[in-house]
Length: 143
Image (cartoon, rainbow, N blue to C red; front, side, top):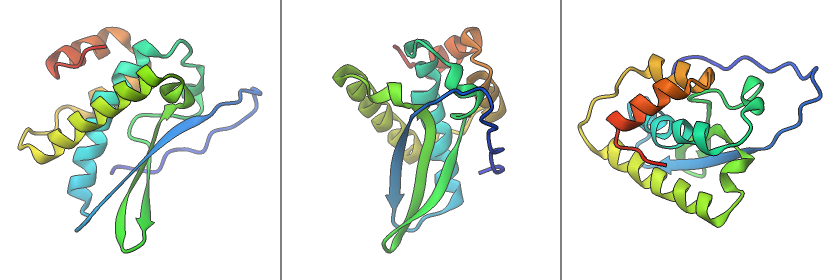
């Protein structure tokens, strides 16, 4: 968890909706949260650069690694806020999200090191499709 996202300025009249994914677990640590956020960026946010027809929303909302730490009863977790509403616009996309979530959780459980988080974040934030394709190939993420 690096820093708070800057609050967007809504002067353009752009309206948007987000898909927020909630995760909580016993014995919450920032180390586990960091691994999960990185994995969600890799397995969900990068592919959505190709799947979503309009990335205009990302100018205001949906930056890489955008989360809130949340309390869920006696557990702590995160609310992942990077994805747009398009991510749940069809049963196929919802299935794709589910598969990506499963891969992200497997990454968290693995001992695989976190890669170049700054590169992943810049790729998402700048909609850099060429670099996204390379990272996805490295992570074996298909669309």
